[in-house]
Amino acid sequence: MLYPDTVEAEVLVHKPWFVGTMFGVVLMAFMAFNLSGTGLAELMRPVIGDPSTSGLYGRFAIGFTIAVIFTLNVVLIGFAPLKLQIGIVWLELLLLFIAFFETFHLSLPFIREKLPFLVSQGVVTTLYVSAISIVIASAIAVAGAVAKLSNNGFAYAIASFYTSFFRGLPLLMQVYLIYLGLPQLGFVINAVPAGILALSLCYGAYMTEIFRSGIQSIDRGQWEASRSMGFGFALTMRRIILPQALPVIIPPTGNQFISMLKDSSLVSVIGVWELMFLARTLGQKTFQHMEMLISAAMIYWVLSICLELIQSRVERHYARSKVR
Amino acid sequence: MSAQAIIEARAVSKWYGHFHALKGINLTVHKGERIVICGPSGSGKSTLIRCFNRLEAHQEGEIVVNGVALHGRMSNVAAVRSNIGMVFQHFNLFPHMTVLMNCMAGPMWVKGVPAVEARQTALQFLERVRIPEQANKFPVQLSGGQQQRVAIARSLCMKPDVMLFDEPTSALDPEMVSEVLETMTGLARDGMTMVCVTHEMGFARAVADRVIFMDAGQIVEEGTPDAFFGNPRHDRTKLFLSQILKH
View (cartoon, rainbow over the protein chains, first blue to last red):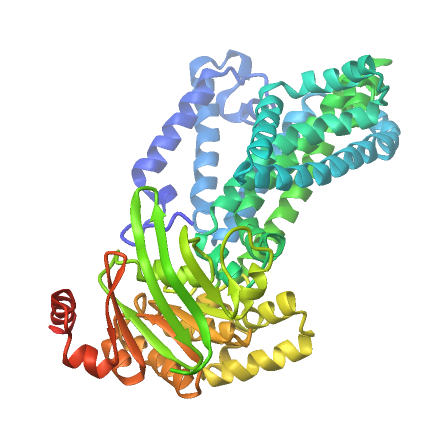
């Protein structure tokens, strides 16, 4: 919550100065474009005559119409209750987005033909590479955070060297280094394990820092209460500290999970048949790049939304003990 | 006193860096004894009782609790601690667990008591601190006084031999102080061995067998409540008492 001040009663989008400014900006913006070739201009033919010869008046009339619709829309949404507002704005943005994709004139039959393979091979690979990496990265993060907070010089040195190194190198480079570098040492490694290893190590390093800050956010009194009852370190960590650190850890970790899902596309460079790899190769033969790229983009987005939903559920679960 | 000694501190010294926090403390706590430690802030009274369950380590001297010496690398520290209850100024309840779970956690996870039995014990002690109806709430939903009583119940569930209280009423609203003090008085009446760091002089007078006054890391004066309040010998004690009893 931003904890709004109780003094301000009026909704922002109903303030005259805001509505006026918004109207002016939209009008100006759309007058700057020449929209005489669009469907809207055709619709306005009765008012402005032939769009292509309507000149400045035509531009003004089209811009004015758009500004009126836009402003009216915003003001009306301002009356709706919060949840409805959020829903309508989402829906409208989504429609605009779809309208944008419409302009590519994508071949739907082509998408329909390739989609099953894109999902059964690409999405499945992306998901399992990410899922395994997430589990390993979380385990590394707990160990790394404990090591970075410990008084043990070796543990601290190793953990800080690790986080410094893997946060300091581009992930793409790590993927190459592991896939191409390890065989130099005699470990021949397949593309999928190499990708998982690179993702786990890189995200483990970031998440180590997140877990460390989460653990540090817990009051010293919790450690003392736990110790005073005879809990050992492992029990204190597992039952007292980590469960309380989780609400602090979850939002940034959710970020990391979403980011990992998308960064798993980087392992396409070593030939793993995941979503990104397939999106590029399937469209190549027939030069239908945009079809596959946009499909893959949508799939990534849907997967990310699923992760966002999971995150908000988990956050709500851990908010339980904070309700008064 | 012929009773068995539960805590024995002999010439205990502790430093924080160059700061000499405890200067050769000698103190024996016998079974069933109620001791109140008072003194100005920074006098080392909290540090002293935190040494008794080794939340702090002393550097010189000897502390023996139930026959176990607390020094060096201790492998049995958990066993010693599970026999010493501690109540903190800021309660330190586990906020992610219900009140009931706060009380069940120790017996279950440290002593391996089955859940059913731990639950029974927990409810019994919550009854005793007079808040059984709050068992399924979370700590934040309780008032300060209630939280502190839960903290006392949580410690009691471990069936400790001695209870340490570290300024248990200092963080409470004035009207909640008495409910906590009543609980502590009840405990004392039932024969619990207690060491309390507190400024509640009424409580000290009514409950304590011995009152100990500390200043600058040393025990300045100790005696029965009557002697201590009625006839303090040291000027430092007189000054302290006059300031704290003035209001």
